[in-house]
Amino acid sequence: MSGSRRGWGRALFALRPEECATLLLFLPMAYTLARMSASRTDLLDGPAAAYPGALTRLLVLLSSTAIFALLIKAKPQWTFFRDAMPFVFCANIYGSLHDLIRFFHAPDITGALYQWDLSLFGFEPTIWAERFARPLLTDFFTVCYWLFYVLGPMLGLFLYLRKDHRAFRYTMVTLVLCLYLGYIGYVAWPASAPRLFMPGAYSVPLHGTPLLDFTRTATVVVPLTAYGAFPSLHCAVALLAVLLAWRYQRWFFWVQLPFATGLVVGTVYLRHHWVVDILAGFVLTFVAYWAGPRIEDWWTRHASGGLPSDLAQPAGTAKPIREPEPTARVAAKVMES
Image 1 (tube, rainbow, N blue to C red):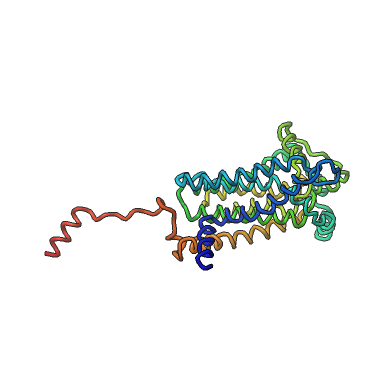
Image 2 (cartoon, helix red, strand yellow):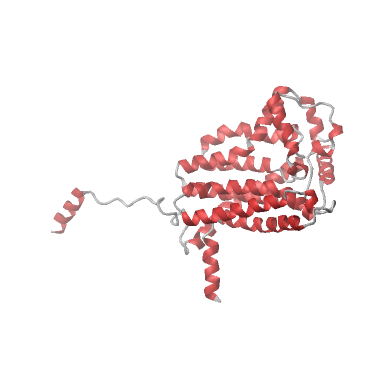
């Protein structure tokens, strides 16, 4: 029995913490998609009728997991592939979150978020903000909003190219932890954006350039936008990227600070989030910022048999030990004689 447990332990710690977290989220997602795929499609109120692509998403989920497992075993030298995959898995899970949200039918808390905003401010901030609506401002906030998808990965890429393995690992684990905790929040507390909850409350339409208007309108087509408001992961990841950049890549902090600030303000201006969503996202930021490096250190110690995290580096990252200079060796022999 003890040998079996040790075998399971070795298999578990052969994974990285973000890969283990991905597997834990993949399991309920695969179960949900399998249940939907097995339901009778002729039942109008059945899950499969609501999600005719459930089987396809299940096959994509299983095949991507299998391909990843085979490649990291067969091609361990492809380190960049393994380092970059967490963001691919995050996107994969994000694309199926609406399945989990509607399948588990947690109570919709949108009305409560609306009341909390009113209690905090005495008015609805997204309605109040429409007095500032200008095409140029709308375009700026739209660009900032879409930069959510690159702020964290760009920081990780800079650290990777700088070969700062420890900072890169801390950043990756912290970002993925923040995203996955937010995904759990989406399923546990479904909530709609203000623009969907009260579309008739706005008297000033938001317009900018045609291209950015199209991208902003396209967000309505994404199924998750119907219930993925609480917490605000856009604001959580933006603040987290700023904090991590201040810690590990100071110049990038100053580059992204105006865009991250615009993203946070823009979520209200563009009517994507309640202010309570943003506050919850900030709480998530500090939880991930505190827990991410500690999880990575704990995981690395167990995976390496108790070595400190700065010593347990993958092969090829440790600095080579310099051999003594030839003159130094000769001088040492002379002194010995």
